[in-house]
Length: 184
Image (cartoon, rainbow, N blue to C red):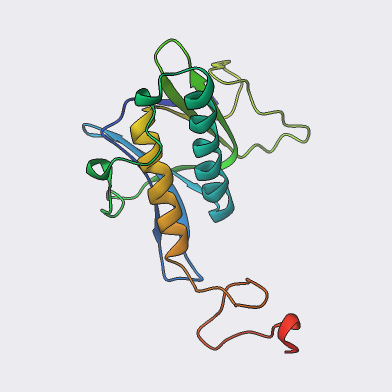
C-alpha cells in the first residue's frame, strides 16, 4: 500500500482536541486548510510532550537564532482557539512517533506525526523524508506565534480532564481512588 503524506503549510487551523468524558477521552490532532481536514489519533502523553517540546524549541531559537520580536515569549491572545474539533471526525491513522524541527529558511516550526508501524525494528523517518515505503505522515508548518498558541491550547485541553490527587498526582475518578501515598 502506498504511503500517504498529509501536508499543511500554514494551515488555517491546527489543534489538539478530545472526544469523550474526562477519564475516557480520546485525543486527536487536527489540521485544516479550506475544505481539507486531516485528523489523527494520539495519546494524551504525546500531546503533553509535543506542547512542551514546541515551547523548548521556540525558546532555544528565540535565544540564539532569531530576532526576539520574531518569536513571542507567550502566545498572542488573538490566536487563541477554543472551538471544538471540526466534524465529521474521520481518523486517518493513530500516531506512533512524532518529529519536531525548525525550518531555518522560512522561520517556521515543522511538526510531523507518523502512523503506528507494525514493523518490529521501526525507525521513524527523518524530518521531511518522503520515501514511498515510510509510514503515513501528517506534516505541518506553523509560524512561531501560532505554534505558541497551539502549545497553550494543548496544555489547556490536557488540564481540562480529571483533577489530580494532591498526594500522588494520579487522576481522580468521580468515586475517588486508592492512594498509596495517603495510606489508601
